[in-house]
Length: 111
Image 1 (spheres, rainbow, N blue to C red):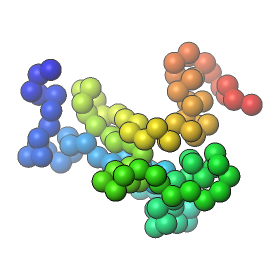
Image 2: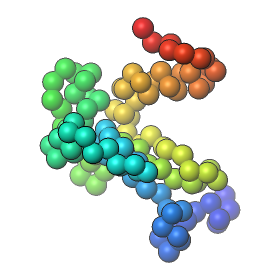
Image 3: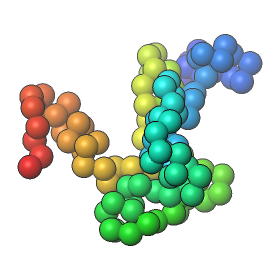
Image 4: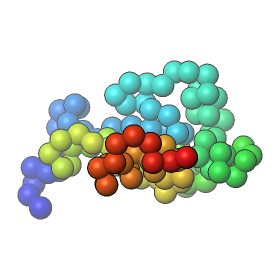
């Protein structure tokens, strides 16, 4: 890899990686400020595990990464989100979106 793919902390703030989803809700580039987002973030709740298991579940990640679902970075030359929590993939909408992109399917693939 070439050095220009890595952005040190001294690089321009707009080029640095950003936390994109925290406790299941967008925080970059636009912050989700609705009631469910605020409750999940304040309570440390994982909405994906909670939905799958059918009961309130706290984020199970270690303290230094607790609540982090995805990161937005320019490491591939353009800004895109990187999934960093495997539990985030339990969201049916994310799976549907990935499936549509992978197989160039229009419309809904989920019932």
